[in-house]
Length: 293
Image (cartoon, rainbow, N blue to C red; front, side, top):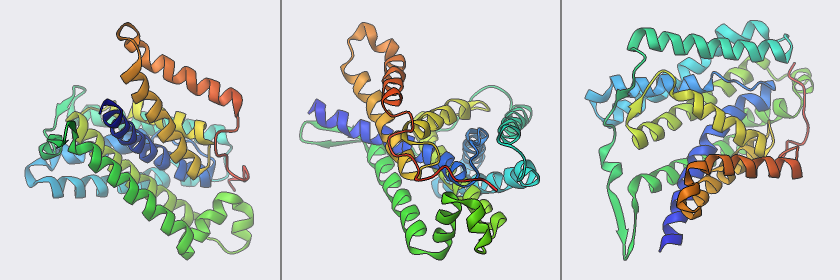
């Protein structure tokens, strides 16, 4: 029974981490850019939920999706489009600048303290099957991640747009010479990244019921670690890295001795380091590093 409950919790957390990592990897695979402002897309979507709470759950989710996508597209237009030909360091610094800008804007507008959002309370109800009990939210998270991963897979493999995105991820320069419109593909990558950020925000707010200007900082760090673990720039790698990190975290929380549970994250990241020493390119690296422009 405990094993089944632990497995469901591990799949749930792994699903959340996979959604976080994929949002980051979508841009990294095309632009070779680790967008550290991705956490603020999640934060912005979470605040959209907070301010649309009075209109019901459907409005909250819709507001999160709209704000997540709009912020992602705006960050591309304002922070990255003019820097298409810049080196990676410049883009990296630009992503931090956008992150700090959005954080400080949120602090100025909404205050620096956390805001409680009693969102989607029905999802906190337990599901009991025999002697096994687990939150309904865990199943919703797993199902949501499965739909998002399945939808992205169909988009990439079954549509012309997906073909262009995969071509850009493999080798941007060659893709451009073959007629792929760079700005359109990059905008689509950012838009999808914002969509995944919004769904991550919905999950995180449903879990914690709290939003704050700095809530994205830890989430983007988790996404980055999952991407590196899976193979930076690899979409399948991001999924695998997210699930591995999630499963490690839950298993350690469940089975570490009580006096060592406080050091759970240290053990988890220590295991990640060991995995990266074994496979420094990641568990499922991309076929080619490609070029950004």
